[in-house]
Image (cartoon, rainbow, N blue to C red; front, side):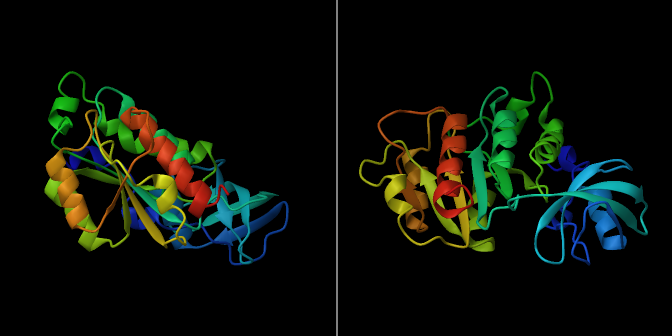
Length: 260
């Protein structure tokens, strides 16, 4: 399942922001080293003339134009300060069971705009597989480009990490590999609402689990609960899987991230 991610940026580069060594001033040209050049070349696929978001030594974010770029270094001209930081203080990741048709591309685009840091898809009991998803027309190779284009459009300072499609077992293993506060959207949950969970103080890292059409199976819900995850309901209406992912991510960012 790795092939269609080969052209995408590495996870190491994705989690890095281009940092200026100085406090920027409008129309100032700044020369940077190989680290920043690698981020721009590998993660943003930038060329001369590209406009990117950078962080200055005072912690503020700016828009800057690339005037020279090579593997050895880069020159940027800073031209505008951003009134707010483009990255949320909350590390939010979303695990989405593979949906049918083109819905995952919509989910990817909107989650990037909502400030999600890490996105993974996985196979569950009621989901399709990657092979079924690509049977008629192979489009999964476009997913890294969807993420990159969305990050550019909304002026992110980093490109969210896109994880290759995981098996159910490998998806669950992420709970131990990357500890986080796990929230599972469960349409069969009868008592605990997402709004109630969000009343607690913000955790540093949140992982949102979204099921496919048909939701999670009872056995999968039991596994989540046994693992200590919070299974929550979004209310009385049954949402499409892509609606649930986007709506829940927005609510979480409002309560714990940078929307509030």
